[in-house]
Length: 430
Image 1 (cartoon, rainbow, N blue to C red):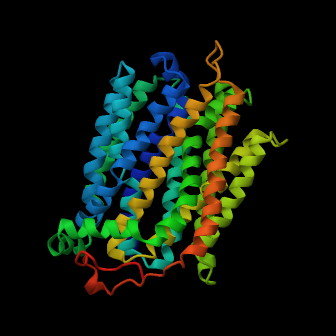
Image 2 (cartoon, rainbow, N blue to C red):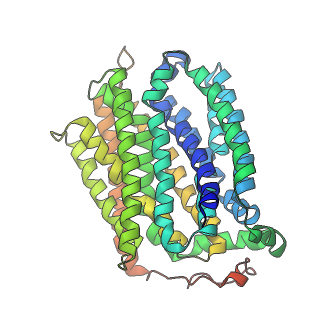
């Protein structure tokens, strides 16, 4: 790939995912303002933030079909306009219902930001480059999360959260125009539209769901990634305030460095996966090793280990994203014409779980009374995080058992001239 083509493939999607993660993480900083201005409790805050996750997840199945049928360029550009509309509704909302509606529309609008990039990478990059290319995108999301901390807190010195969201409205429109104007499009997408029916594409999605790959790889990775997402994008900031006793400025600074650790973790995991792949070590093994370490980090948090909060939460971020390597592992186990649907199916699982986890953590915390100053009980955090850990441990055990039930299939990709969806009933599980 030439430099110009590489830039056209990477940079617009990087801006889109940066914006997506900024939207995803911003409530971590503005949560006190939303509690003060809207009057929500812990459960309401979890619902308000988590509705982004559920609308995001709800569109993943049709998104996979759209990406494979119409290509990432047109799909993401169109959806980002909905994100802009959602940001405007959020900025001008005067009721919890309006805030939820705006947040939900944002989640729907940014639902393609990562998956469109992954689909484009599968279209343009060799398979051995995918783990590191994907890691670059994840790292870009980490930078977006960093921008949702100290930079947002600084912006709030000059405007309020409504002004910030009006700026994000304009940014979403600008990125949508850039993607549509700059990103190259594969000729195969035009052939795909005319060469396969919608029914055949839906059949391909159903075949993915029936594959043993989904039941062996996906559950444990889904739980770890979704828990990490649910906690880091909402509950880390309140925990640092309510349990560690940090001030608002300290919380913003701490979240910045935790997001920086997330970014470094993504880059490191992609680099390690690429290097080890050359030695025949599969991405799945790397991901599972990191996720096991992540279980240990959560135990340290729950047992109040004598480790500085910033250090322990940085470790939480670094190892919590280990499951992201699974995207490259899964996409390489299916034919390339199914790449969009494979990634979005996996992504759907993660975001449904993240929504349930984000809201569920708030519901558990809400079982303890809130202090007059708006702080939540430390015991509530402990019980909520323990519940999340218990589910992950159970799914890790299932991962071990499932490998004894099913042999992991290795799926041979068809040659380029057979990349169109096959007729319903074609077997992709071998």
